[in-house]
Amino acid sequence: MALKYKRVMLKISGEALAGEKGFGIDQNILSKISSKIKEAHDMGVDMGIVVGGGNFWRGRSSTGMDRTTADHMGMLATVINALALQDALEERGVPTRVQTALEMPRVAETYIRRRAIRHIEKRRVVIFACGTGNPYFSTDTAAVLRAAEIEAEVILLAKNVDAVYDSDPKLNPNAVKYDRISFMEVLSKQLGVMDSTATSLCMDNNIPLLVFSIKEPENIIRVLNGDNVGTFVAREV
Ligand code: UDP
Image 1 (cartoon, helix red, strand yellow):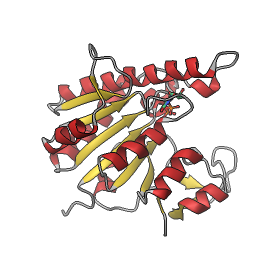
Image 2 (cartoon, protein in one colour):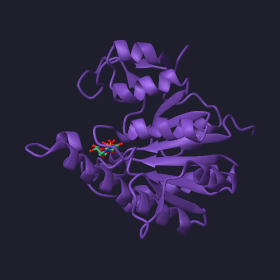
Image 3 (spheres, protein in one colour):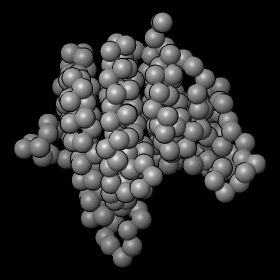
Image 4 (cartoon, helix red, strand yellow):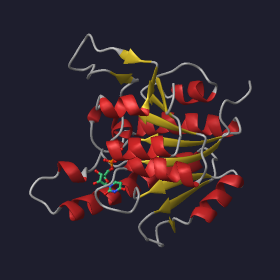
């Protein structure tokens, strides 16, 4: 089957790795997701991955703490997930590199754009950790930034929700699901797809976004084959 996308940025939220426990890493889920990443890699898809850290720590949710310090802790949490994902992928024979936006050379490479692209050209999966390296940002913003830098054709936003809705489907049983929606509409309706910084960056750089549930890891393969899964977000739809 012809590939719909050749180079993609996969964003995996920390929450997705936690599974039902809601905290930490569920090895069973990690192993299912890594198997699908291997399948995608074997199909010939070049991939960068940004991992979140919300399964361990979210800077904005910490109370009574200096926000920058709390965000530094959040960035460190993404490193835990990145290393776990690297381990799971390498166990399956997928060559990987972790690159961190904050320097920690004993643990992983420091992010260098040209080096990341070279790894991808050599068919290594590059896992980007520490988000953008700056407090007050999210790993969604990092996913968009790195997608633009590595010239990914699309961002695959793998979450615990299966699509974009007009209201929270957990709270409203009549919530309407969007198959396609523009970034402008996401922003004006304040739909919780990504934070507005990430959404604006995606819109301004014209990078399409596919939002889908990772609870069914097969969805990674479906979206790469161009199947209608989740919600497609773009500048014009
Ligand atoms: N973070 C940050 N700068 C970034 C990316 C992340 O300070 O560029 C911190 C922030 O505290 C955030 C935490 O890392 O709450 C975990 O990232 P995020 O909440 O985006 O993870 P996800 O919700 O995708 O699991």
